[in-house]
Image (tube, rainbow, N blue to C red; front, side, top):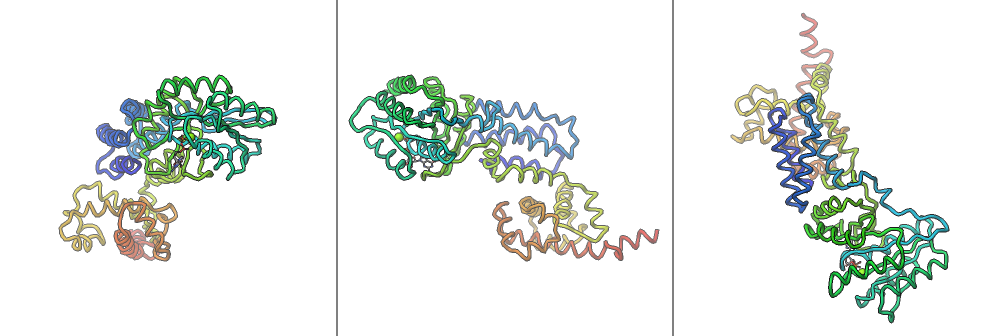
Length: 444
Ligand code: GDP
Ligand code: MG
């Protein structure tokens, strides 16, 4: 998903003409298509599109800033979609108090990951110094108690359950009461996710809830189930009005879009994400980080840096050239400017150092090659862009990283370096104190 959204935005970034309404619409359609393909509900996609459009005012934005503004709007609106209450994760996570008893109840369909998650959650609270216990209120599924027992034992968390009592409401109250008496501060109740009838399951949930009076009800939702996530979450919301969601199986190749819809549709924040089958695979959730991950950006800071780097300033390049310096960033600015001039074949011979590449390309439209080079440079860090390229030649692992990050090949990254080397040499000769430019200026 991230890749396709990035491609859509990337199309804008490396586009040849200025960003206008039409270009914006085109990009929004691409983004929408990507979201739909990844199971985000149509209604949410339409709203997202509308919000982006209304938050971007192209007319009042200088052309050089437009791409940044649009990128930021896409990012912000995706964040808004996964943090529907505008709250941060912090407020979605139940906060127990010392010497008080807090009860957390987990609901969700069978297979969603409740039993696995309740131990993860118990570890989370135990590590923060709270006396934490687990109650197995799943009497429907054979082996449910054993599964919980096994995990709890591994994590050294006290647990309660029964092999003989068939009524989950009874087991739940007994367990919670026992732990309460013993001064436990967090009691986590695992429930069943299946029944002969859905209404029976929901009835049971309501009864357990009435018996244990949870401080927080959490819905455990499998992030990999696609579009079904939204209707499932809505049905549970009506029956149990959970206060937050835990998204499980975020480690898999889940498209995740269904989960986004579920969050948006129930207007319920995500408290945690499950990222594996092991009892420690639980991570806190921050919308910005989630969207950064979704877009394959890694982190917000990296994203900001990338946006910053788009504010290319030709003045810097000119100043650099006068001083005889030519960085990779200068090269990218130059290539981007060349791209704006349209089909290259006709003008390649006019650009210093480029004609030899045009020959090597043997008829291929050089613009495509330049695009690839710009893509590769987009995956460089600021440090790399501002360098003379030596750092990359000294540490080839950087080139491998750049190739991977930009979807180019290592030989294509090497091509960037070769071209940059040629240009840097020319600039060194032309610029600098004793260079041609200075001599010409002094002669004036
Ligand atoms: P329950 O029926 O809701 O109690 O679900 P379980 O806790 O029994 O989990 C169902 C399956 O999903 C098990 O095989 C778990 O190991 C697996 N599972 C749960 N959470 C995660 C997760 O975050 N990542 C992965 N990869 N698997 C998970
Ligand atoms: Mg279970």
